[in-house]
Structures are given as C-alpha cells and as structure tokens.
Length: 362
Image (tube, rainbow, N blue to C red; front, side, top):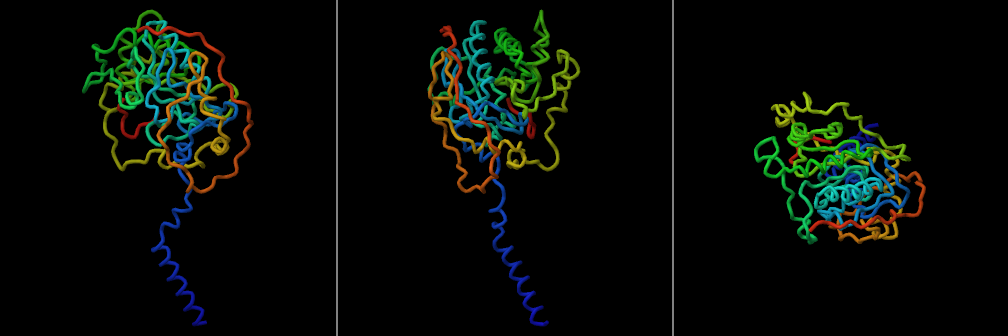
C-alpha cells in the first residue's frame, strides 16, 4: 500500500511538472481563429450564391469580384483582396457607378467589399462578412488610371472639418448629395452609413423628396467614405437581415445625440477583445465550414466582372498567412455546386475627362 501511495505521489508530481514545463501543449489543440482561415482564401467558393449569418458574423459562397477597372470606376487597396461580393452587390455597384456618372459624378473609387468567401477579416471591419456591404470613397475618380502604388497609398479626403463634427463646406458639394441620393434610391439598399456630420448636412440641405434620408444612418467614422448595405438576397434562407430602419428622416433627437459628448467619450474599464480576435468557426453558422472547404473556381478571371461585359484579371493580392498548421475542421456539409457564371454585357458609358470610435462595431 505504501508503495502504491508513493507511486501516485510521483505521478502527480510528474504531471504538474509537465503542465508547468509544456503549457503550449494546450494551445496546440486550440481551434484556429476564423479570421485566419478566411483571410487565407484567395478565391471564392465555386458554388451557387448563398449568404449565411449576419453582416458581422457570417460568410458567403458563389462570390464574384468587381474588376480593378471599369468605364466608371476604379478599385482601391488591391492588395487587401477585398473586391469580392455577392453577385447582387457587385451588380449594384456597377449600376451605381454608371448612373452616378450620368448624374455628373466623375466615377467611383471603390473601397472594401468583402474577402473572397467573406468571414471575419484579419484587420479592419467588423462587418463586410457576407458580401452585402461595400465602401465607396467620397473622393471622386480621377480622369486617369491610378497605378497600383497610388491605389495603395492615396488617401481619401475627409469631408469633416478638422477637429469638428460638421461638414467642411469647402469640400462638400451638391454632387456628393446627389451621389448619396442615387445610392439610397435602390430598393436593394437597406441602409447607408455616413459620419453624423454628413447626415446633419443632408438634413439641413435636402429639399423636395426627403424620404430617402431614412436610409442614411449616422455612425462613427465614415467621413472618408460611405458604406452601402444591401438586404439579404432571395434564395439565401440562412441570411439574417438587420432590423428595418425607423420610418422617419432620422433628423431629430437620434441625430442630436451624436452632437453631445456621450458618443465620443473614450471607453472605460478593461479593453475588450475585438470579436474577430476570438471568433472561431464554432461561432459562425455551420454552413461556413462547407464554404471554407468548397472548391475554387477555375480561375480568378472566370469570376471577375468587368463593366463592359469583359472579365479583367485583378492585381495580385498581398500573400496571406496559410492555415497549414491549423487544426482540421469538421467534415463540411455539402453545398450544391453549379457552374460559375458572369453577367450579360452592359453598355459602355463614356466617363467625363472615418476614424472609428475605439471598440465600436457596425
């Protein structure tokens, strides 16, 4: 009995020593972060378009990319590889670019849309995960083609006075208002995020039909660009819509709140981790495992949409970390595979020669 007790004590000591000496053994079995898995994907899931989850917690399949250049747009920050979206989102951006030019806007500079398969991003946005969000710069497109270096380094211009909360009238023009009105006019658009100062400018200056103002929502940041969000698309039963916007112009007490001290006070207490820094595949809809493991399309060209009906190869993105050391994920639920297709030809159009609050989400 004494011998058995001694052996038990030795085993306990050795076990404690092993845990203290090799704590990383626990980490090796930890499930990888979803942002690393989705951020490593360079191409979309070659399946029919489907959206799963919510704008800030989900993924999508069957995505397409907007071409780096079109007759009425240029895509920015190409190294991020975030020109991808649900086909309905890409089609809407293409339409907005053409109709905005017809309204007198020089052309769109397109910011982030989504990663090839959506999901949490390695950095930046909390949303943009399901292919239904897109950022459009307030800076108009120049009358020349930007180089790859310019697209990486060119800064968008803030529409807000330095150190203030209201629009800089030296920069804001009626054309900016017309561009937002055009974007809000589409039935697919659920809401548009802008800086509170821009919302106030619209409330103070829009005349005639003001019904579209309810779609324009104030939010932290969004002084350099506006953020278009479209509704869940037909056929995506796993997509969760955001609550409808209130049925008023949004120019009353809800807007006045943004011009008090409360929205701008620094957060207090211990800093909370950003959701993307702790989110694993278990946090996402179960279909996202299948989206992650679905086959690639035959090429990027095959799923890149050009503004004149032609496909255009995008610039090579910056290499992303691979997931070769990641723990295996569960066997995916099959997703129906269908041939990848593009939109039909669209007519040529002649082109005339925000600082987010720390810890905020959208």
